[in-house]
Each structure stands twice: as C-alpha cells, then as structure tokens.
Image 1 (spheres, rainbow, N blue to C red):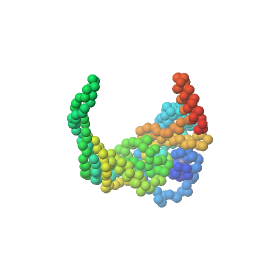
Image 2 (cartoon, rainbow, N blue to C red):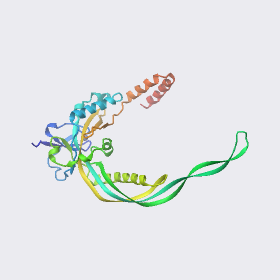
Image 3 (cartoon, rainbow, N blue to C red):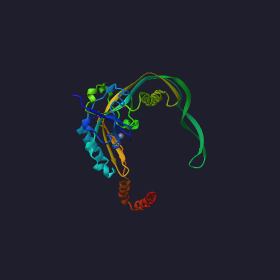
Image 4 (cartoon, helix red, strand yellow):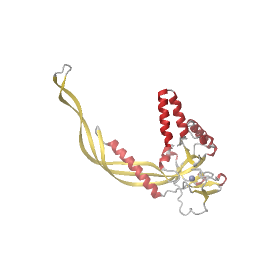
Length: 316
Ligand SMILES: [Zn+2]
C-alpha cells in the first residue's frame, strides 16, 4: 500500500523533504527550526531527478535511539543542560541524497626526488685537555633530482552531499558507507520514510566531487613517488569516464534547539553502521567549573586559576 507523502521545505537550512503524512513534523527534522513550510504539490516534480541507487537502513529506530542516548551520556558532563532534557525520541530516519562520483585519471607530474647517502667528513675540535684534534664523522646527505612522468588511477566511490541542509564536512563524519549493499532505486523502499531531495545540482555535485577526487589523486601520486624523500611540485590530471549518480543514504538525525538564541544541535547516526557523530557545544560555565576542580588540587595553580578567571571575567 502506498503511504501518503507530504512535501516540506525548511527556510532555515534549505532542506526539502518528502515525509509520510503520519510523521508530519512542525519543526525541521534536520535542524529543528520551526520555519518549515508546506510546499505546494507539484512545484518541484518537473525538475526533480529520481535517485539512481539506494542504500537501505540496517539500524532500526530503537537501536538508533539507544546509540544517541549512550553518545549523549558519554559527553554528558560538558553538555549544556538543555541537551540532557532534550527528547531523544525525536530521532528521525531520513534518506539523504548524495552524489556518488567515479572517474579514471591520467596525470602528468613533476616532482623532486631525494636520495640519501652517507659520507665521511673531517672536522677539528678540542679534546678534554684543550688540545686541537682532527676527527672524522659520518653524515647523511640528500641528493635531489627532478623527475617527471605519468600516472594513471581509478577514482571510485567519492561521496559528496547533494543536500543544502547538510554540508560535506558533516557527511564525512559518519562515512564510510558500505556501498556494496547498494540497490537500484525503487520508490517502494522509501515509502513510509522521510526522504530529502537533491538541493545541490548534479553540476554542483560534480564540482565538489572533482576537487575531492583531485585530493585523492594527489595522495596517490605522492605515495607512488620513489626516493627516500620526495616532493610533488605540480600535477595535471585529465579525467575521463566520469560518472555521477544520485544515491539515497540511510541516516538517523537527532536535531534539537536549545538556549536563549536557539542554537541548533544535530547528531547524525549512520543508518548502516550505527556510527554516531555530532558536535556538542560546550557550556562555558561547566568548563570553568571543571577547571576549578582541577585547580583545587594545587594551591599555587589555584591562585593562578583565580587570576586566569579574572582575565576571562574581564572578557565576559
Ligand atoms: Zn532545517
């Protein structure tokens, strides 16, 4: 049976999601912002690209909640009080769109290659009785030479975000995903789940993925260079057989707002491996209290601590 899906857009983080009607939320499941709007049906269907592949959920809701609780527990002491009261049951399973990129790279490079050699040199010094003596010692030196050549490599499985609501750096914190479990996209798999649609175009994804691929190629060439030491001066890559597919990845998201300025907090769980990542903003009061406990141990340091707190105080 087909579940009825609603479309929402978050004015705050830019995420655009389809959600099962019974799970409709008044806050964005991505950033907990209340600025979600119903999107008129059909507004986007014309430009929307269907995903090519999908990776299913392995971690279920109960397991995701258990892992988030344990994770918050571990960072509890420094966590803002509001976080402890945050309701962990608001964990939401979302299919996140990413671009999956691969290519073949043919590169030309110029490098400097260092070969170490040892040599004996003589030197003069004074001995324990103050007499001038001549001695020899072995020293290691490096001879540098220029090397240029070609290098070919396959670049596989570069994943970059296709979502405006979640940047690449945050996606990387819950990678890797085992892409061998990937299947052809079938709408039946996402039925009943929230799914975000790609808000970064294929071209934008391509550009992001290419720069990631070039970093990867640079590392590969550096690993490949001979010598005791080497330095890659320049490389130029021609990319061919480029392939960019839209893939949906399973993630559990815990989003909360707290504090007077409604700072947002997001914890992500890899829906395949269960890896939990998030940034807990540290409460300043607790950091100061924490350092005070340490300072009490040594009176001298405690006095320095008071001085330090005076300095901090003057900034507050
Ligand atoms: Zn949002």
